[in-house]
Amino acid sequence: MKLAVVGAGIVGLTTGAGFAELGHQVECYDIDAGKIGLLTAGAVPYHEPGLQSLVERNVAAGRLRFGLAPEQLTSQAEVIFLAVGTPSADDGHMQLAPLWAAADKLTAWPGGGRRIVVVKSTVPVGTADRLEARLRSRLPADCEVHVASIPEFMREGGAVRDFFEPARIVIGTNDPETFERLDLLHRRLPAPILGTDRRTAELSKLAANAHLAVRLSFANEMAALAEQTGADYPAIARVLGMDPRIGPHFLGAGLGFGGSCLPKDARALVRLADEAGAPQTLVAAAIRANVMLPLRMVRKLEAALSGPSRRRVALLGLTFKPGTDDMREAPSIRLATELLRRHPGIVLTAYDPAAGEHAKRALPNAVQLCDSAEAALRGADAAILVTEWPEFRKIQAEDFKNWMKRPILLDGRNALDAETLNAQGVVCIGVGRLPAT
Ligand code: UGA
Image (tube, rainbow, N blue to C red; front, side, top):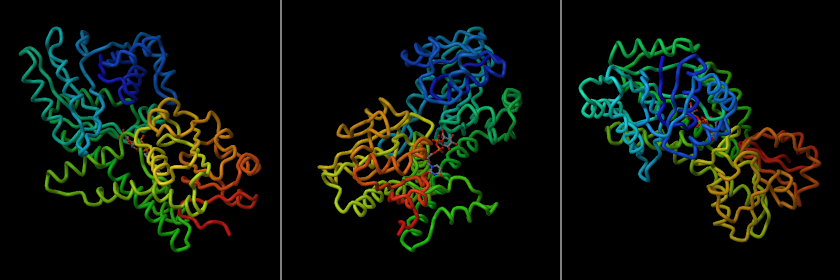
């Protein structure tokens, strides 16, 4: 099939390159000239495992091309994916302006005929209906358009794997012929295909992310309760996870959820639900609980250091999770901001293996960015493990003791081997666990 993707973010690019790998002809568009310049020169501008080689292979095979704007859509693409961002506005609403702008550029296609526009972006319920009406009112009479919703469930850092091995594929359309074409397009992927109407598909995406958010806030509040009552949360998580009705995933307590999706989608769902008269009180509470977690960590540091002002504190990891360079809504931002606000004399050093320039832009200027864990830890009175990058697990107790002024570690993700470290003279305090005595 001939396909086009509008929006060369992680979702759009992975979708485009993935379908090219399956043998389709794909054009990928973005209004960001810098991004298209890099992609045309063969460089993928994201830290996403496997994506660079996937793109290279398919560009070389002539199945994947890049262009600047959808008005360049001169091909005969039968299916056009819209994968533009829908960031949060201040009031929690999703901003749909990028989606309308992209759609409005699809004003005609040469030769007219039937096309399918698929909304990949996460959007409020009813957006595909509005989009179809808008396109139909603007396209010439010889163009027949059908809009479908195929929500994306891929994770950053695992996008390529999630494309080729999705847990499920949801195709939301009200038109049987459109379903048939999209079903055919996705059939080679090893996953059940669920056909729904468009609104159900749109809400299922928001529901999935909101469910994950609620689950994580439950885990974090339970971990806090374990701390207060002398119980061990990681052991509780194992007990919960072995119940097949609960399952083991997304029970990890820590500094909470960040990124460009979970917080934004949870907020958007709460707004949508309020407007629809079916308030999502659980999701609203999950958002509130999540925001408090960095503050809880600040209090832990205050207790561990008996007054962190004028002390040197190292942050290990900055991105919202390991395996990505993404700093959007990363808990490290709130943590650093709160530490500096409450303790103006504090010296904050930080190291992240991937965040690079993104960290510089996202964090307060006072944070000293270092180019290794050792450099961040040297002379520190305490360290907080913020993001569980695997390399932090390789640091030995002796290193912590040699490098730091005082080897006090607050492990914000329960990523380190606290028992071994404690036995070797490092104070390692996890989340939802009692400090070693
Ligand atoms: C999330 C969803 O998991 C994807 O299914 C969805 O497609 C995507 O949003 C999206 O809407 O585009 P992602 O934002 O990449 O994916 O991040 P997750 O892997 O879900 O992690 C979210 C946050 O939860 C991270 O900050 C992570 O550190 C945190 N987390 C995760 C925990 O605190 N504990 C856990 O046990 C798991």
